[in-house]
Image 1 (tube, rainbow, N blue to C red):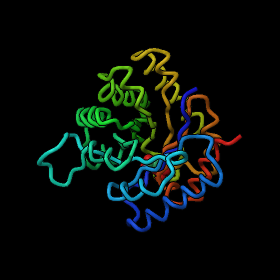
Image 2: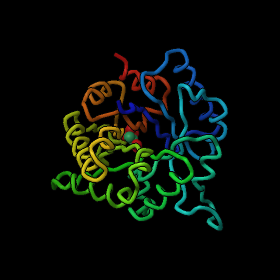
Image 3: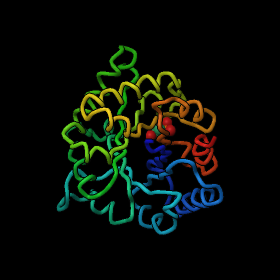
Length: 253
Ligand code: PEP
């Protein structure tokens, strides 16, 4: 059975103090009521070491939102995969549409980041997804396939086992406009088929594919009920412990 995951992406929100408070709240709520899936919070770099010190990794894992495409050296302001790992983080989000759009992260740059993250023992949550214009012109499959092959298809199946995919239609991120469960399932099934063609059926069946884009406690259950949707990557709703827990609880029977 492949792993079910709910992962939060805090983005550029929360002072250090507010972030510690939120991490504490999420951790406490999961200790009081054990989750039925893996739960991850991905925080800004500055929170990582402090949050690592307060969470119980039996119920809550930690991730970063990015890492550098270089191993080390004179890259002022950058944070390497090795540094992320040294904080106690287990995951890193790569390829988020905001990084692709605002920081010009190309498939080639992302390939370097993925390689460095995996080489340093991090698991990668790799985001893919089309913009509205691409969906409206029926190009979503081709876009997603190019994002996958451009950054991930030189990996071995063994390396790929440490990659979680997150399908995030850009038109649904932070807009309140969720993809329907049917649209999500259709794309997730296509992604799984694409992975099967490249890495084989067993690898594809074992790959966790998350949905992201305006996922909330009110729509999570319907999305997660689809056979190829293995959980969610949650932006806005991960900033409130109650909402985030509500989404985690969508995995409960
Ligand atoms: C995201 O940015 O990864 C995301 C899913 O955001 P939101 O849930 O706010 O749409």
